Length: 87
Image 1: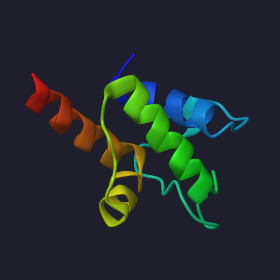
Image 2 (image 1 turned 180 degrees about the vertical axis):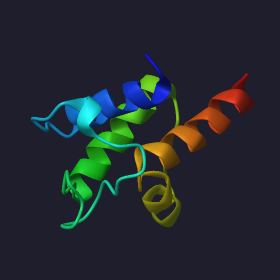
Image 3 (image 1 turned 60 degrees about the vertical axis):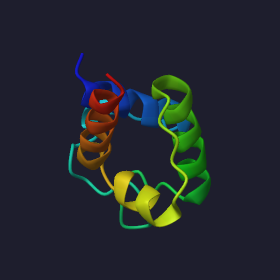
């Protein structure tokens, strides 16, 4: 299982969505009414808490968090950089 696959499962679990994680594409928009999952600000909070618990990444800046959580691909890229820096 890849990091992106893990993140898709984490999104489905943390945001309590009833969908197949494999159906989420790497570059689809995650938040907003036009997004396939239509995640909202409460979902963002739940997802950021799940990411902190699983990976130790704390998302504190709201503007940066919006960019990081924009898609699975963006989240995976940020997380890979964070994990590499931690060693």
